[in-house]
Picture 1 (cartoon, rainbow, N blue to C red):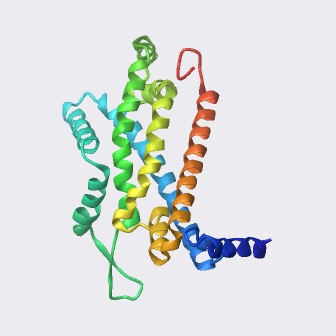
Picture 2 (picture 1 turned 90 degrees about the vertical axis):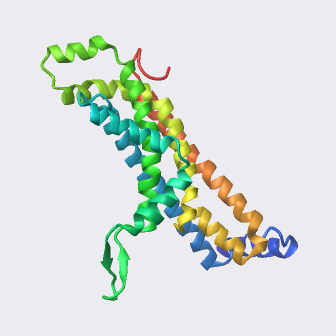
Picture 3 (picture 1 turned 180 degrees about the vertical axis):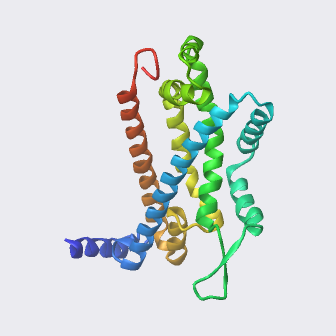
Length: 253
C-alpha cells in the first residue's frame, strides 16, 4: 500500500513538476511535516487552555472592589487588544527575552534561555486571546440576573464562592458562542509563531518549498486543508459542548 502511494506521487511529480508532493515519498520531508503539525496542535491546545484561564480570572478581577485592580485589568485588555499580535510576539521574544534568566545547557558551558521561543509564543498568543476572553466572560457575567447574585449573597456565599459556583457556570453558557469565535481565531493566529522560528506547520512548509520550489503548490494545499480540519474539529467540539451545557434561558438556542 505504501509503495503504491509512493509510486503514485513520484509519477505525479514527473508528469506535473509543479505538483511535487515530495513529503509523500520522501520520509525526511514527511517527518518535517508531521513535526510541524504536532507543534501546531501543541500551540493550539496550550494557548486555548491558557487563554480561557486568563479570561476567567480576568473577568473575576474586573469585579474587584479595589479600583487599582480593575484599572490593571483594563490596562492589560487595552494593551493586548489594541496592538497587533505579531508585534506582541516579537516584543515578548526579542525584548523581554533579553532580560529573562538563562540556564546552563546540557554541554555544561553554553547558556540557554529559561523560556524558549515556543514558550514565548504560548505566552504571547495566550495573553492576546485572553484579553478578548476577559471581555467575553465579562459580558456573560453581566447577563446573569442581579437577583441570582443577590440570592447567593443572602445564602452567605462569599464573592469568590458566588463567582465559582453560581455566576461563572451560568456566564460560561452565555459566553460559549463568542468564545468559540475567539478560539478559532487563536488557532489561525498560531501561524504567526513563524516570526520567532517556532517549528510549527507553516514554518516547516516554508522550509520544504524553499528546499524544493516545485513543492510550493502542494505544501500550500496541505497547509490550507489541515487548518480547515483543525478549526472544524474545534468548532464541532464547541458546538457539541454548547448543546450539552444548554439551560433554558441561558446560552445559545
